Image 1 (cartoon, helix red, strand yellow):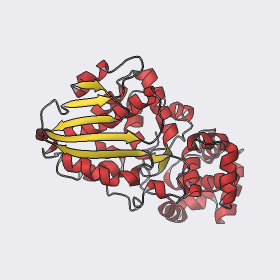
Image 2: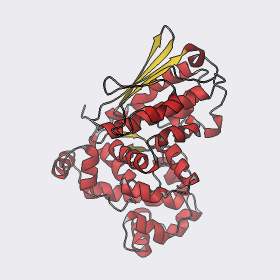
Image 3: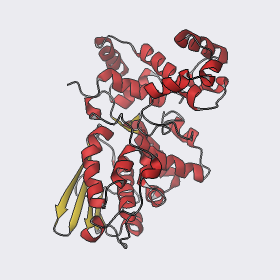
Image 4: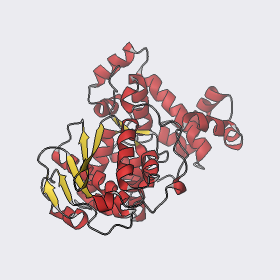
Length: 350
């Protein structure tokens, strides 16, 4: 099996972050552009985003909004916002069972995150590991967000605080760990690079009160380990996730893949394709997706997808489909196309 080209994760994990930013009047589009992610990255919670770019988004937000920002985001979050992984977790009766379900689902959620859940004499221990070489700042923010989401699962019960009995986390390079104690209780500097959370049995085995039904059913396209995706498919995911950021170049995709542009080109050639062809495919899919799921004017769609003007995009759509954009929006073509290409329902644009 060829290793997945670009470390990827389901984009739904970004939805609580982007919603929090919108509620506070922060520019989501600007933040996503700086991380080389497209403006609609989390509309479909079960599409894939490059992990490197997603972590860059977290890093930038942590630097501008304070070292405990992901605790604050988690405090107002229902884990069901995060897509399939949240929906299936909150469908379980207790935090212990929710976390065990996440362990089972994790290979279908991320190519590079590993979660283990162990029973202890006093409750449950969660261990979160990443296969990627994050620096201490990035790892602190990533682990803080994971811990904050785990806390939302525990908070869905009637259990009283503290919900964690102990948390080990990689310290922030300058802020350390003191800023986390108001949120997590007893916090210690991690002995290695893993996040460790101990949850007492009174919390782990309490009943979850908040149903996940409001978030709809789990997408049928949630089967198969992410790491089993072939090389070309994973590059296609990354191009789609970057499309509209104004910077979807082979160099950007190579950075997300942890390789060089030359090596990326060579591997694509060995698979019988070229980068420009994958960009064209992504443009086609995203153009038809936006036509079918939004009221954006043609000029705006053209701008985001890199076309010179609306006329150029209209000609491309005619070439792909034999239809005009107006006909696609008015008829069933766009709806059928969306069902074939989307992995979940279209959501609100951030």
